[in-house]
Image (cartoon, rainbow, N blue to C red; front, side):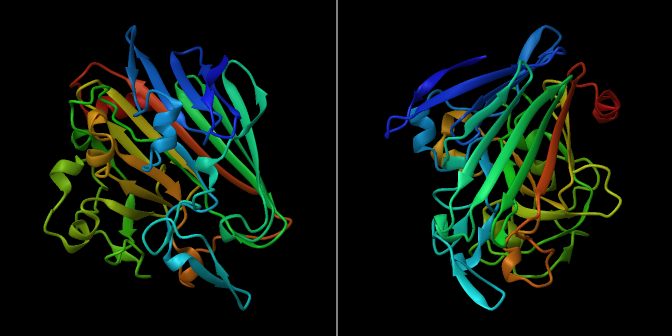
Length: 348
């Protein structure tokens, strides 16, 4: 289903696309920014909202915390909006203090995407970023397919560029599986099979070190709540005013992350072919959208600021290559309070 959602300042129409699966999963996606405005799971005849969303287009145009947006060309920060490749210095737009964040002011999350294909349970959006936009080299053709299958939301990025360019997209929904903003998102149980993380400097730029999570607040290898796991005196937690860190997945990790709300009984399994996930606990929402409560972001991607760190996995898309990244969010519902093991069994 497709309906009008408002008009951009330049007169272009924004549409809301509603997708439904045959097992009670429903998604609302905006053509502006590919925003996941709503995601609901039928839990025993009651729809449970799973992500945070805003009421109307003016609210999204004013939003500065990337609620539900597609992120690209690159997720995370690129230090000082600058990197070198093949002996040439490239300068990107600055939109986060002294740095470049989430593709800049003209990135995926601020674009009006074209509807290329649509069905009851899927939609394919496309957009073109021209050479030099936000400082990136090359004309980039990108598409994103959203597809509901049973109780899973699948997202697939594909892209090609005619010049070597940094490319590492991700997705930015804020999850509170409790379905109730009065229930703290930090009380959700989280498991991430990551044995390392990337320490940050005071401006949230990776230092270049890949550190072990052992005996740190970044060890989520066993399910625990962020509220219980954190150490607010840890230097890295102090700098980020909470979690805003890249967790590096273990080589034998079977998925990116698992999340469970004892309050609602809803569980999520997040899978992707990305090597890492940025875990952000949504602390900026307190000031920008206090009525929403908090949600946690789990952003599958490569290493932030990779073009400036030779020791990080390469994040340059070469001309002629086709980029593919897949993300899948699988949900299940059990009786509230049943426990982690029962929730994980329901996700199989």
